[in-house]
Image 1 (cartoon, rainbow, N blue to C red):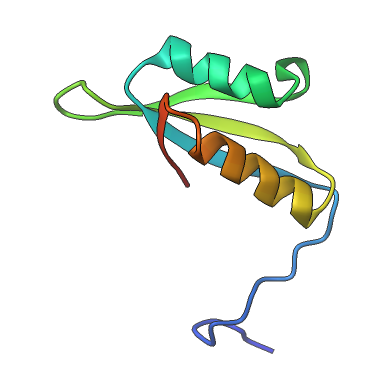
Image 2 (cartoon, one colour; image 1 turned 120 degrees about the horizontal axis):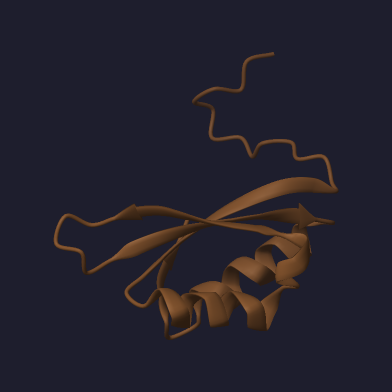
Length: 88
């Protein structure tokens, strides 16, 4: 069945690899915020884009999440950190 456009939540089978796009202004502070929440030895952090003005940058954080509460908790924790402007 095609669920495209129906507003249905996607079926996610856990554990799975998940990627967060983290946007902020200070790379060092963003990395510290990530390290405060996850074991950076078991995730992949890569530089992504920089805004045309150079003010904002984004990092991709990829890691295994075990369940939806863990995935949502990490999203909320990162999104609430003062060094992070937005998490996608």
